[in-house]
Image (spheres, rainbow, N blue to C red):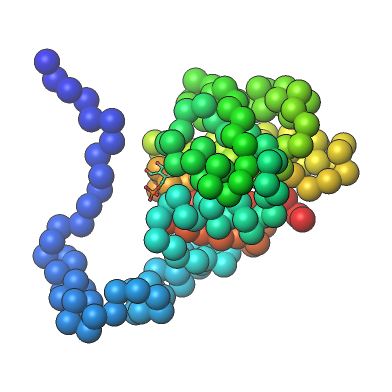
Length: 194
Ligand SMILES: Cc1ncc(COP(=O)(O)O)c(C=O)c1O
């Protein structure tokens, strides 16, 4: 039986990166403010037209993003039922309570289910959409729903995208148009104006 791989990582060949690895190992600069981290942040920032920061993992990126958005202890965060477990774990690490929303045929968060859940639950601090396996969330619809609800309730509700499992497509770039953005190993936030 022929198996179909779920994903195929697009990795560089060793010869293309060997020189850079040698340089890093020889100069011992493997943490903050080193040449390649700085270069990566600058290039990501230019590409996304937003401020970019690197952190140690996607999970930490999400935790920092949730804290920076002001998630309060015990507040609920709506996230898709189909994502990597770290999306929900990050909410718990940041003191929030995950509430799962259904996904549509494209495997990303269902806008209509989100609207229902926002009506049903009190104390929702925000929403995380996960871009999955090359398929971006329905960013325009999600933004509209969250902004409407936020206006209705007269309080800010954040909309954050977990992009750890996707490369930066046009849609993904589109979901960070506000220029108030943290980019962290694929996790980035879109802050709806608060
Ligand atoms: C959608 C999603 N979110 C978060 C993470 C967590 O990233 P990390 O393993 O770097 O903490 C992953 C990792 O695969 C992921 O696929």
